[in-house]
Image (cartoon, rainbow, N blue to C red; front, side):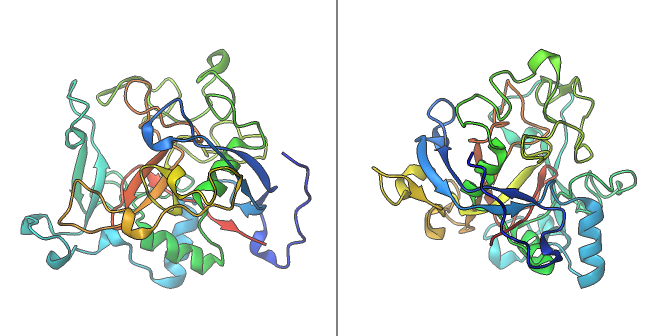
Length: 320
């Protein structure tokens, strides 16, 4: 990555943030999941990014200052979800709930529970709390919540391309993982992921069953932590299954790509529910070799903007 200096910060807004120099890199991958294709050259201008995902401590400060009520704390409206069981239209969020034994991996309902009362304040369900989790990433935040936090902080959310460039940490984007070609080099865990038989038997060889305090694993070469694993992170890009189709020019390097159109992001499996989806990046503590090899910079996942989950967080950026 070129050693371009960071522009002078005009205010305290960038205090503690890390400068990501602008660069060209290979975005996406032709070797893994179909939605990552095609690998393509893009160029991204430099920007500042938070060194960690936003923590519970930081999000609590935002809520205290603004009185913000998250999406998970507001009962869904029946008119927004045609055909929904009225008994399910309560304030809730999705919580990872490991089953007792092996289950079919094509049925995610076997380990996701629509948990009434779950929210950022109660990340593992209504009987949980934030005691001891102050420095863990905040979770159960929907798109409206992360946008509200970013606006309050005077920051923004990263594009998918910005996020992916930062995740490589200045390294060439030609290895399997952000840190090299081995998931656990020399037996050292580089990120909070799932070990064992997913979803029922996490052996916790990395030391964590759920989220971990930010910075529990090695930083990348830019000094950013938890870009991989721990929690998925929101980006601004509308999700399209084939991101190469929205590249400005198939023959040249695309400059600061912004993803697809909102109208193309709807889930084709849910034609009656027109909820647009954004791109998530980075994988989470639930990613496992046997189920979800998305603990890589190129990996991506679709997330409906109205939804929150127990493995979903975010971090912010500032552009010059």
